[in-house]
Image 1 (cartoon, rainbow, N blue to C red):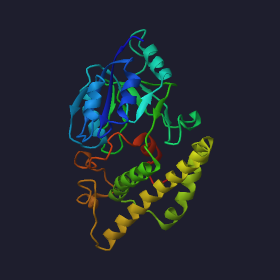
Image 2 (cartoon, rainbow, N blue to C red):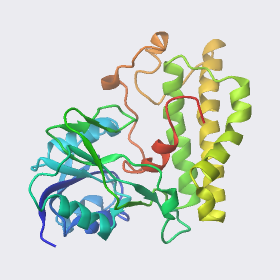
Image 3 (cartoon, rainbow, N blue to C red):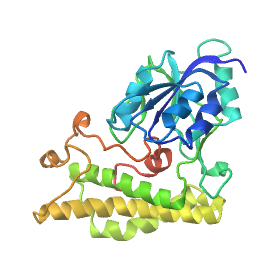
Image 4 (cartoon, rainbow, N blue to C red):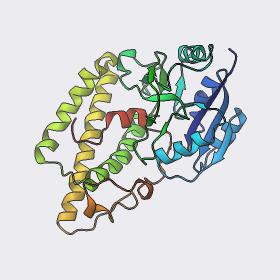
Length: 308
């Protein structure tokens, strides 16, 4: 396959074990790979450089700001974003290459189905690829918004196309890693709820986990994954419960005048403005254990509302 004028960019921190699969999956497709690292203490930088990537350091400012910086470093107008725990399939590589055979692609941006692959699987079931974010786009007409947690591409001009080839997402190294990521991410999202004046009710805490399990198992078709799907659906229910429970805890401690600890800088100062838009430039999470984790699994399964 002849390489096309496409830049692939990734953000990383301590991803030496998972990064090779991501870079190797695009090496025959793209003529540039950019890795923006936020201070890895493992061999991430050395691994990326050994695979031909251009590596830059940028201090952590949150997911959105980190990706905005990364896309700005690309030399091509067309870019593809991957997380370090992802890899594109050969089918997706061929589909992307075909878009450029006649010149410029027809749309300004393209969505890509993300197929979760759990640690107990060698490949995921295609029925569970419910998340279709924009990953391939012309950065002259689209780009990531700079929200510290909710990183997504906004199209400013032009239409959006849809690709069928998949991105394989191995978000978790183990069940224990899944638990750790849920604990980390639900803390950030709980703080966002409190800042916006959301206080979960007792009924929501009681009912939501039950609804969330069946949403995952039936509506998101995790039943197709058998026992693995049961585990994933229970973890999703736990995730949704913890987000609300942590938001309730913060609200209750604030109501009682007890000390409240926030991990999102600026959260405590802005609580009196709950319900108003937060100052994203001053409110970004601390650097996570793995900056590329997550999040197609976690972020797609967790919205900023309090619905299941």
